Length: 231
Image (cartoon, rainbow, N blue to C red; front, side, top):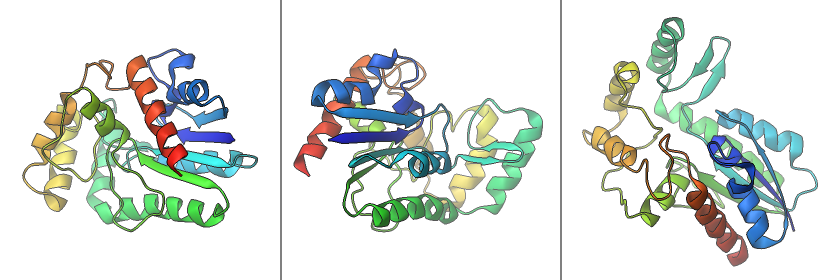
């Protein structure tokens, strides 16, 4: 079996040594050929491009999709993140005022649909890092998300739902953008949903920054290997 793992910093293994990224742990557990295609801060478009450039020769494809708000534009990253300067901030406000949440889901879902159509003879597995659930039926999409699985494994169970998530949605540098966006599309509990997800870090499976630690990476690799074996 030759396995390709596609993703963002959670697949790259931010904050841990290379041997403790989950693809390398998967290689160790499965004794199969495993290669990762990922980068820090990857958008889902970039993850899709990794697939287009690198999927040949693999019979098993694993996607850990990033937050669907991330978009790379000529002005920079349009995303809910707290490290942007004032000029980018104005662009972010404009961007999220003019895009709908369904637009964001459609873009992501179309990547998964195309991948499935192009790989009917391969094993394909789709996961969300932060917890997005497709609005359409997507074959081979698995729950829980990377975040929720590791949270559950350390005793954090989410009571409230939220359609999209990344850490720091409630940061003061984000709230003036996230608040009008979420209150347009979601219920009053979205802030509670953010808080209980923020509370997982640091923890048994998470670093201070929210990325998986060594234990979390190993747990996720075992979980993914179990799903591969079931299929």
